[in-house]
Image (cartoon, rainbow, N blue to C red):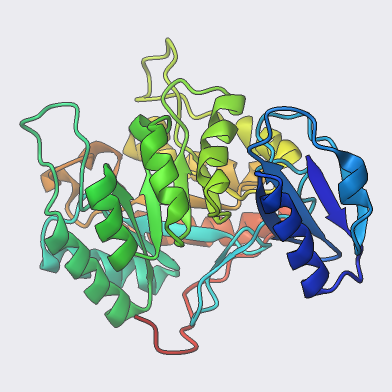
Amino acid sequence: MLVVMKAQASPEQIQAVCEHIEQLGFRAHPLPGAQRTAIGITGNKGEVDRGNLEALSGVAEVIRVSKPYKLASRDVKEEDTVIRFPGTDATIGDQSLAVIAGPCSIESREQAFAIAEQVAAAGAQFFRGGAYKPRTSPYAFQGLGLEALRIMAEVRDRFGLRIVTEAIDSPSLDLVAEWADVIQIGARNMQNFSLLKHAGKVRKPVLLKRGLSATLDEFLMAAEYVMSEGNYEVILCERGVRTFADHTRNTLDLSIVPAVQRLSHLPILVDPSHGTGKRDSVLPMARAAVASGADGVLIEVHNQPEKALSDGPQSIYPDQFARMMDELEQIAPVVGRKLERGIHVTAATS
């Protein structure tokens, strides 16, 4: 169910409706919009008595949401969700393209700083790097853990880039939430429901990658798990799915971008690095991602990919990244976007 408040409803009226919903034994999820506030109701096993809710002061109407992903649906929130980062002009979800760039894994302080300096100079706003790496082989490099988080915090202090890194379980999620700006939930954990609930209890934006074989509904339901716990700042990310194709690591499904934007208010990024697994395919698919209407791209960049401890073949060189930024800057206006190169820090942030 969805309670739609009147445009002129006061904060006190909105709070009163939320308290009434909670008294009924349900959970209230107020989602402010540009014109109105909508309050999603979860936890109800059947139909909620609409009459009692409609009689409350400030309520315009009560409607039934038919989709299983209620909070992620445009039925609940018509306006696009925009994720903002206090102290900077960095955003995800508005007309500006978000560019997240960096190595698959943080290997050393020198490596991280060398790459961060180059992607920042080219105009990235976010720095990605793995501290905890879920690897197919137990003998592969698993990441530097807390040391990597500390290195990325130094990168943020030095270059102003916001930090995006993956959590692979509950203990690492708590550490990532403490040190990073965006918590990434990887494809292998898209349906790790206990981890999604944990991420929902943490008040940090969550970047949720599509599972290896996930349908659109499954993808949005995973986002719903996070949002159902009260964290509404979810960023979706298409990173390729498994098909019979063998010319790329995965099949990058750009058709999901307009499909998500039709059904959901959440922003969606595209990861052409994992989506293709091949360095020479990253730039063409990044261009295609922007042309398809994506809110931004997630790119793996390494200054020495031939020596990378993980995902070297799909990591582009810094000069290729700079060229990609030039190309995206030209494509963006064609689809009503703009590429704001670099990040402006407006206040001291931790």
